[in-house]
Length: 110
Image (tube, rainbow, N blue to C red; front, top):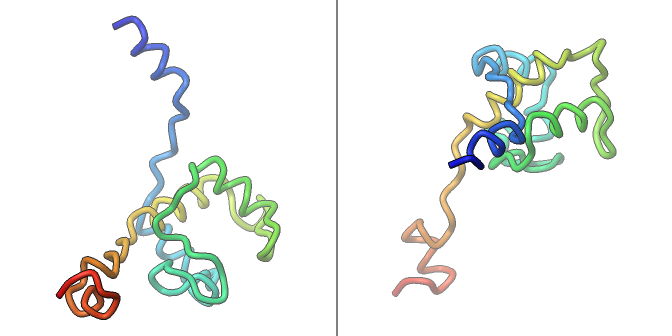
């Protein structure tokens, strides 16, 4: 019982972010051009499912290795929290084995 407050204190709290604002930013900054309209990738990395914390996502977008940087002058931390919320809201595609026709093609179903 005593560990619960300690664990809660150690867990970073992510800004809630506004999904609608994030959707608008995704379009405004043409994120879809590289990451796809659904965040599933293309020329750029797959964003869905999002594996980063909002803090790591923010740090990466401000100082990336393989994409144009979006400094704090371009996208604030609050805007990136919105963008993060939008990306987290995007649906994850089902696995091929969970789609009957694809499962038959890959030999996972008769």
